[in-house]
Amino acid sequence: MNILAIGAHPDDIECLCAGTLALYAQAGHRVVMAVATNGNVGSPTLPSEEIAAVRRKEQQASCDLIGAELIWMNFDDEWLMNERPTRERFIDVIRQADPDVMFIHSLNDYHPDHRIAGQVAEDARIPASVRLVETSLPAIGKIPHMFYMDTVGSVDFQPEAYVDISPVFELKKRMLLCHESQDSWMRAVYGEDTSITDMMIDQARSRGHAAGVRYAEGFREVRTYPRTGSWALLPGFGK
Image (tube, rainbow, N blue to C red; front, side):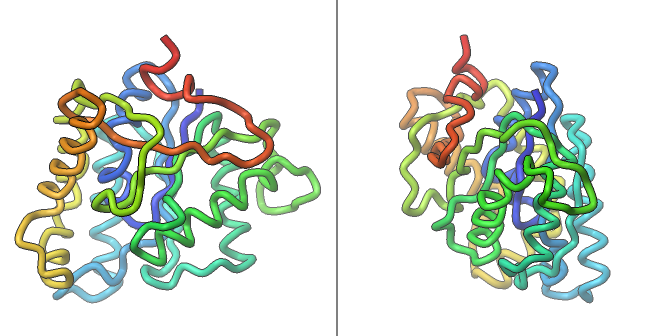
């Protein structure tokens, strides 16, 4: 299968579904990680162009750990808008990845870039397969099945299913640790006493407790017409 995850920022995918992606990769599936914004405001000290370059390098390093392909969409951080150029770019991302399964942001996550990325990805799902929706790439032959990723901090998100990521948790942590520039950023902007990695560990442990395993990631199904798949598409659910 082809698997596509779309995150608003570098490190979002690692926080919310990298364990699941690692399981897909280990099972031999093609994994694509698409990042909508370039993270060019994500530093308390570096200029925007420099931090954007740093964050792209960090994202590539993370993808390399599981052999995932990176699509760098390069929108400005904090300024992702639901406009035609954005939708066209998202449609092309879906067409490039040709996914059977997609993971997108929940529409009630805390950050506007997260919410916009989730909404545009959901709205681009069907047009990506429509021949007369003309972009730079041709239409794909199938409509992918979508799952919402957890929200940051698990705020106002009740999973419908959990994926046990305990066997690949250390790999997920290594992927997130590639984004080392973000610890200083999170502390400067949000006043966090713990690192972004510590926050991820707490969330994975909490979801694991709910699922009866050590570490887990939680998901909800995007229930829009047409229904093109089921929970059996998630790792561990098709056995």
